[in-house]
Image (tube, rainbow, N blue to C red; front, side):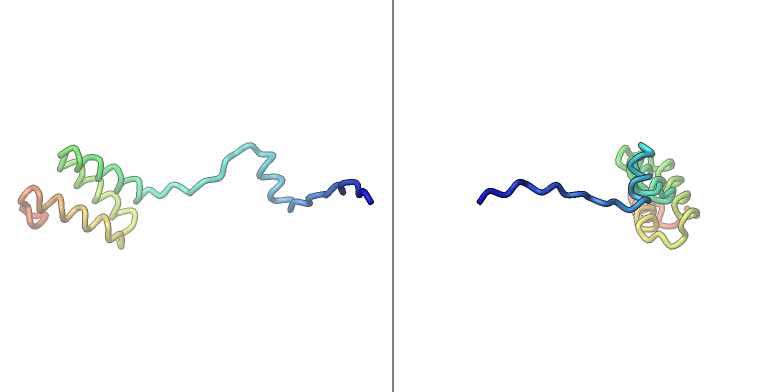
Length: 87
């Protein structure tokens, strides 16, 4: 015996439908501390030490417990021979 295919209806929650209709893409929320860190890493990679340190400081102002920014800033101080910010 032959059975005809059954049509299936997909019900979406209203919130999901609104998101699809808005045409806006949702993505990660920009994190200023992370953006400063990434820019600092770019500057450090180009040997722009002063600019890198400033970006790491900006990241730490945005997120005072940002261990990666402390680490990267310390490495720049090491590479430049300044083992403390006062030197």
